[in-house]
Each structure stands twice: as structure tokens, then as C-alpha cells.
Length: 158
Length: 310
Image (cartoon, rainbow over all chains, first blue to last red; front, side, top):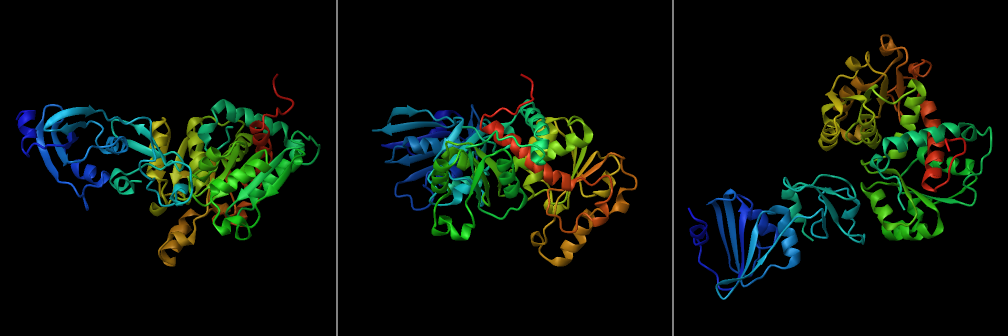
């Protein structure tokens, strides 16, 4: 199945954001991270497990009337670093935005370890997670050193 | 300023340099000579949870070298009880002192404090995280007994899950090519991420629940305390803890130069009958806390200890 027909499984959107090439099964995490799963006020379309030349199979999310911000792209990098993001205006791709996981994720999510010093709500230093393996998305807290579980991490968005 | 937060902050060469400096400071630590290398310097002791040996040995180390110490004092009477953040406390003490020794119940507190401070921070234990100054005195004790750190067979026993001393020590031992046996109850195994790290760095690491089967080939047996509160019921604790106790009769077939270590305080994991054997090193180990902390204070404050190679 071509990429185009995958995209057309749901209606084209007039304005908003298309997140393509999400690793299959990762779309729900993306929705969690972007706060689109509960109480989203904009229409969201979701396609899961469609064939993909690049990934074998993939998920796609279309968010209407909302353009992802830089902060949101940084969050997206945590769970779908291979994703491509297109900003749609008047039914056409107005802009393509790159996402990439750097060496460190700062003030995007909070360490998941319950006894980490950063759990104190008034401690002012930034929340810092070190990227120890970019391909496997292995992260560790800069302060306590604990490895981070991605499923738990998406619930700790700042 | 760079402090000592985990053993990763010191290379193997750094470790040897500090141990050599500590060796040279032994007469000063014993009070046989006076060497005021740190005169005019002030150590801030920030202990947010109880400590006897670590706090006192930092204080003794500073004073033996002519320096001074200010203490946070009892946390329940300090500004911490009013809700002051660690960041604010460290900012204040940073202005008062030249170096900080920190113990805190939360993991990561030492790295956090170092990021907040301009003066060097020495991690005196952060939650179940790291305790690198303890590791340095452990390494000093091991080298004193065996004349080397490389290639030894070391058994770490007891509570390996929550025991921060063994977390830091295991990393250092693997770096020096020691073979490490981790002997613990299932419930108190070394955290998997630490075991993975040790193996990823080429460590020869074995996990077992049978401490006594590991004794015969060991050069070092490092005991730790198993705390009752880690277990759901007392019967389970009694059953498990019994398998991680050493009695003098257990040492009949061990190597003649094998040493028994313990970060102290012990409860009943080492029977007093072991104290009088040639294997017991835990009280010397506690003394070594002073001399290694003297060497570390000098290093982090940029003060050379006389007698080293030019």
C-alpha cells in the first residue's frame, strides 16, 4: 500500500498537524505526551499499524486546528524520534518540522523515580534527562541516574 | 567547580593518586604529626539524615589538617523544617564555606547540590544512590591488605538493593578488573541497571543467593546490614537474614589473607567471634575514613599533599 493511500485512510484536514511515521503502536503514547487523549478540544484522527516502506508498519495522527509548538516537538522526540511532522494550512503542507532527540531532554518531563530530588515541587533547577541510547530511547535522570520507563515518563509531562 | 558525586568523577589514575596521598597522611590522621594544609579553609557539613562515621570523619579530617567545620546541625531545628529548598540551603552554605559534604535522603541530591553550588560538593550518601567517599576508604583498606586493587575476587553480601556503599564500590572494583560476586536474598538483589552497567563495562559479575559457597575463593568479603523493615513480615526476615551472617567458624577454609569488611554499623551480620580473627578489617576500615577524606579534601581544594612525585 502506498504512503498516499495510507494517508487517505482518514479525511484530509484543512488546518492542523499531521504526525506521520510514528513507530507502530506508539500513537497512544504520542497522544498522552501531547495531552490529546483526555479532554482534547480539537478533532484528532488516528490510524494505527498501516504498512510503511520506511518502518514496516506505522501509526499516523492528524490533529485539526492546532500546530505543534517547539516544546511539543521536543516531547514527541521522546516517543517517536523517527516521526515526520507536517503543518497543514488550507489543505496543503505549509511547513515540515524536524524532530530530533538531542543529548539531553530539559524541562520536558519529570524523572519517574519517586525518591529523586527533583520530586520536590519547589526545587528550582531544571528537570534533566540524559539520552544514553538515542536509537533505543534509553534515558537516565541527570541527578539520580535512574533509567526511565517511557510508559511512566509520558505521564510525567511538565 | 568539580566535586565528587559518583566514582565516575575519578579516573583509575585519580583513585591511585588519592590513595597514595592518603597513605602519606597516615601519621597526620593518627595525630602523630600536625600538617595544617587546610588552615583557613572551612568545610560545610550538610547532613540531612543521621550519620556517625561519615560526618565525624569529615570533621576529624578537616581539623587534622588545620581547617574548620560548620555543621547544618539537627535538621529539625534548621531552616529545612520551615520548607527551605535544597537549592536555597546550598546557595547559603556555598557563601559561607570552601567545600561542602552532603548527605541527603533523596537520590540525586548531591548532583543537584553540585549544580547549585560554586564550591566543590562531596557526596556523603544520597538516598540509595552513591557513596563515593566510602568507596575510596574501602579501596584504601583493600589495597592496604592486599597491596593492590587489580584482579581480586570480591564478594559483596547482604542488602545490595538499598545499600549505596555497594553501588559505588561495585563500579570501582570492576574498573580495576576485580571479579565480583553479588550475594544477596532475591528481594535485595543489586538493581538490574547497575548489574547491566557493570557487565557492559566488561565486569566479571556473578549473582548468587549463597554467601557461604562464595567464601573459599574470596580475597575480600564485604558484608552489609539487612534491615528488618525491608521485609513484609518478621518470619521472612529471620529466615533470610540468617543466611547472610558470618561467624568465626565460617572462616575455617577461607584464604589466609582474605579480609572481612563492613561499612558499619553492624547489627548481627558479623558475629563478635570474627573480631579477633586476622580477617576482621572493619574497624581499620572505619579509621581509614579519616585519612582518605583528608586526601579528598586536599585534592578538591587544590592543595598538594607533600611527599608525592614532583
